[in-house]
Length: 197
Ligand SMILES: [Zn+2]
Picture (tube, rainbow, N blue to C red):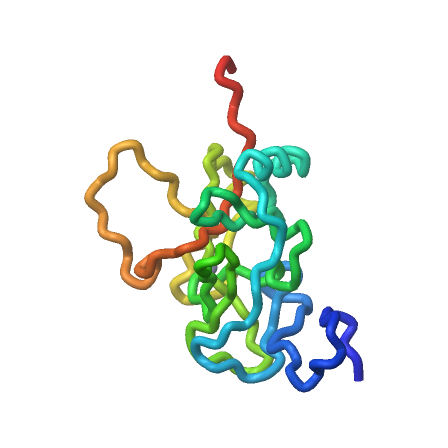
């Protein structure tokens, strides 16, 4: 039996089949699912894509008609971003969840990999939490576009990270939500408003 979504370009490593497959998700569009049981801490897939500058990412978002829920750029420690829509792979189909079973980690060399947070059973949907930074106005349309339907009991209802405030109030982060430093934030960037306008 063959899978239409099998993307391996190396047929000689069939005994080491990918731990995931892509199919329709009840959460949003396509999703990525465990093809077999996955061990805690297992490195599942690279978040592939072309590394581009932040400025280039803004241009690309503008060309695509502004931010929408397919435009996900991963920001890197060096200030660049990875565009999963450009030479990317199945990892770009991994959905957000407020109770994720995976996490994205930026390695020393600036590549991003998706790791299992805990044991994942075969056929479970893979997910990770990406607080989306959107610097434009959080209009109702934007909020709707980035509504979260992960179904977790702790679902916040949105994939958008709270907008940074000018004066930081003394608010402790909610435990478990962003308790760990997130090395690679998925970001959405709108074109900067013209200075004169
Ligand atoms: Zn949610």
